[in-house]
Amino acid sequence: MSSGMGSRTADKGKAVERTENTPLLSGQTSSSRSCDEPLDAARLRSTGASSPIPLWRRHILTALLVLFTAALSFFLVLALLAWSFVPGRSEEAELARGVVWRGPERLDVINVTNDGIWVQLDGFVGVDADWMLGIGKPTAVDGERGGGAAWWESLRGSVGRWMVRQVGEMRVDIPDSIELFASPPISRNRPIISCGITRSLPVPLTPSLRSSYPPIFPPHTDNPDVPAWLTHVSLVSKVSPIAHPEELLEFARRSWIRRKVAVDIRVKEVHVSAVHVSGWRRYIKTTRRDVTVPMEFDISQPLSLLGTTDPPHV
Image 1 (cartoon, rainbow, N blue to C red):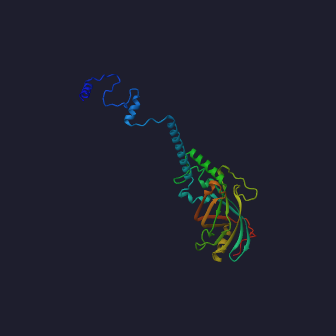
Image 2: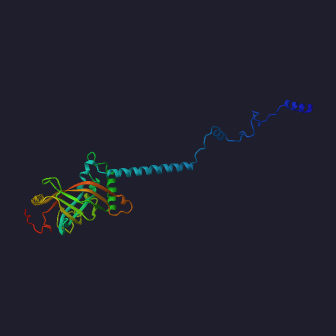
Image 3: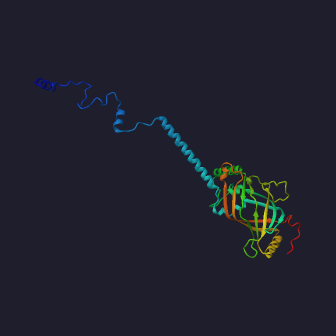
C-alpha cells in the first residue's frame, strides 16, 4: 500500500517533457483541430457560415432570372397591346361607322302570312377592321386610341391586322326581333316595323382598307357606291308592321320624297362570335345589349318589291 502511494507521488513529481506537438492546454483532446487543417475552413466552421455557391448553380440561377424577366416583359407587352384596342367612351358611339352597308339591291316578297310578310333582302356588307381597332389614326385626342409613337402604332397595326386575317369572318346572331324607328320620329317614338332574322348573319372583317384606296368596284354591280371590299349577303326576314296605317303611309311618303329610308335600328341583344372556333378563336365573342344603329337605305333605284318607279299612292 505504501509502495503504490509512493509511486503515484513519484509520478506527480516528475516533470512532463514538452515537445512542439504538445498542446498548450492540458484539457485539449485529440479531436481538436490539427495544425494541418486549413485556417479558412476552421473559421467557417466556428462561425457557422455556409459554404460558397458553386459556379454552375450561379449560372443556372442567372439564366432562370433572365427567362423570368423576358416572359414577364412579353406578357406585359401583350396586355398593353390588348388594352390599346379597347375603345374609349368617346369612341363607342362612333364604332357603328366601321360597319358599312350598301343596299338593298333587291327586295323580294316570299310569302304573306297572318304573322307578317316574309321577304328576302339582298345587299352588301363589310366591317372596316382598322376603324374598329383604332389603327392608322393620324391624331387622337384624350381618351381615344392611336396617336402614339411611330414604332408603337406600327406594332399595333401589324398585330391587329394579323389577328383580323386569322379570324377572317364574324357571325352575328340576333335572338330577339329588330325594331325600326323612323328618323326623325313621325308622331310618337315607337317602332314602325319589327323584323326577325331566322339565321346567323356572316360579316367579313377587312383590314388595311386605308392602304387600298381608291377601291376597285366589284364586277357584279354597277352601283358606284359599293366598294370592292364589301361582300354580298342575302337575308330572309319576317316583317311585321307595328305602327298605325296613317303613320306607315306618312313614313313611305316622306321616304319617297327624300329618295332615302332613314331609320334607327334598335336591337335588345346581339351576339357576335367568330365563324371558325378552333383554337384561340373560340374566345372571340361578345354580347351587346340595347344597340342603336342609325342607317339610311337608298331607294333611288327601283326594287323588285315596288316594281315601278312611280311614287306610291297615299
